[in-house]
Image (cartoon, rainbow, N blue to C red):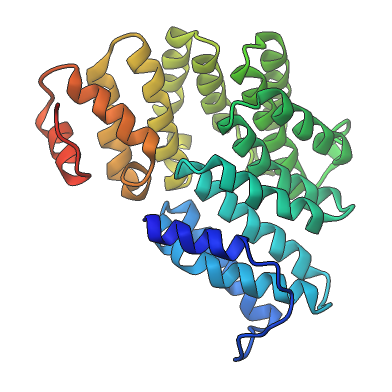
Length: 315
């Protein structure tokens, strides 16, 4: 995994805009298909596959945008950088993720939709670096640009972007203890999701899961777990992408561990691994949580097997 990250680092450090390596660059249609494949890999938590294709994809998208090809290339470039930044956050590389997330902000230009897409991983990287106030600032700026004042009149994609930005802003506020702002933003997100549940990918369960994680950041672990249990018992939970479900289960272990429920934390990690092994087996957060579970005392057989699989032992 370290070698794969290094290749991505080298690709991000490359500023050339001319194809100097020879060979044919993909057409816009082919590039679009490759970006779709990368996005699908991310949603299924197939992170090793994503890391393998990212370096070439970053180069091809950058060259296509520099060649003055049609406007869709800027959108594709923003999406590729977003994927790179998001997977780097998962890998515990927030500084590199910040670099990857900052690049598409320029590529987005003055387009509010592209800016909104680019801001999501930037906010995530900033939160990972304990820069919650800055994450909130950039997210709210993007929200204003997207004209979130009248979201109900917007098309589904814009509604999803608006809702996603509201959630990122709420998590940013929660990361530095601002419960009032967190509540206001999640309430706005909840109203948007409830009003448009049949016309947008941004659904109420997305808000509920975010409420649980925000409560964890605010130290209200009992509320976090109650919200989590309710949300994950619904049919809507099973309809979410594998990456989202597994990532949430890993993140909610913070609440379980905070109240000393190591068995619940272990169960969450095992379930996450069953849904998307790519999450539990590459994320430092998962390894850290599992290490804490092991050190707490005897563990169920499935937890021990997971630890052995990813190379952890009780110390």
